[in-house]
Every structure is written in structure tokens, then in C-alpha cells.
Length: 231
Image (cartoon, rainbow, N blue to C red; front, top):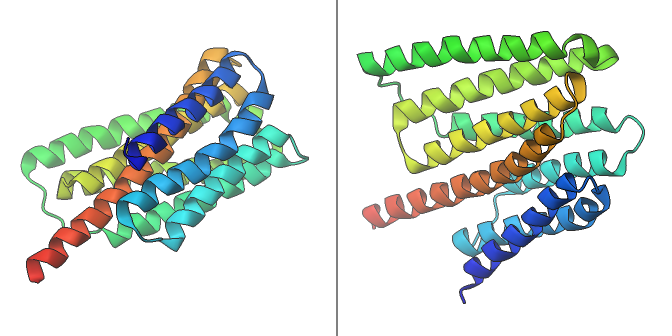
């Protein structure tokens, strides 16, 4: 069995335990299984690219710390969660700008992007409208967090339509999964507590990091191809 296949199997097991923890409403399972996913995601990345991107490792660490702050229930933990993921998303903006290419949209592209922009703006406003009052004293942090995610998905989608490369696709999917996860978490915490929302959050949170790893692997593969072309 290839090491990468083994890592994926272990990720399925640990990820399944995290989701099972949510279903059974037993945080202790996730508290012990979630830390295992971080080195596994790193190993999946490492065995594919054979090098370390410091910023990407920081992103993995920030995602892990955000989860730990929630699971341990420390005082003001939710503020630290927002801070961890805010820093994570700022780094994703760096990856977004790093992969920027000159804009080259056709008329159909502009129509699709226009529809996406309007729909996405309405969705974000509705999420804010139903969670705004319940945020209480963390509302300023919540608003900044929502704005960051709002522009991050716009950037990711606009970049994919412009480039249409595998790495831009994986990046857009990763950002979308982060947003689905965060939206379910916000709705569960500030609007309607729901086990279903907790389960969806747990699933998409893991998928977001997995697709982010796929993005970094695709980025490394693209660089290898370009290097070989010039040799």
C-alpha cells in the first residue's frame, strides 16, 4: 500500500471520528481525534511535494488552534477562534494574489460573474441579518470576519473563471467549504441551534482543509511542469 493511500485512509478514520463525535454530542472523541488530522494533512502535503511552505504550515496550525479553542472551552475562546481563522484567511488572500493573472473575461464570463456577485451578496446579507443581534459584544469581530469571507470567495471565484486551472479550482472549492462550515457554525450558535448544522460544519471543516492541501499539491505540480518545460 502506498504511503499516500495509507494517509488518506487514516484521514478518513480520524475525520469520521470527528463527525461521529458531533453526532453523538461527545466532544471528548473529537478532542483526541482532531489533533491527529493535522499531522496527517501535513504528511499528505509533504509526500506529494517534498518541500515545506511555511505559510501553508501556519494555515494548518491556525485551523488546528481554532478547533482546539472551541473544544477546550477556555475563557473568551470564541474570540481566539475568530482571531485564528481571520489570520488564516488573510494568508489565503496572499495565496490568491500570488496566483493572480491578467484579467481575460469573455461576455458570458461577465454575465455569470455578475449573477454570482448579486446572489452571493444577498446570501451574505441574509446571514448577517439573522445572526447580527445574537452576536452581542463580539459583533465588530463578526462583521469583520463576514467581510473577509465575502471578499475571499469573490476573489477565489473570479480567479477561477479567469484562469480555469486545477489549482484555482481547488482553491475556490476550499474557500467555499470554509464558508459553508463557518456559516453552519454561525447559524447554529447565533440563530437556530441544530445538530444537523453541527454535523455539516464538522464535515465541511475537514473538507476545506483537504481541498486546501489539494490546492498546494496542484501548485507544486504546476511549478514542476513549468520547470521541466524550460529545461
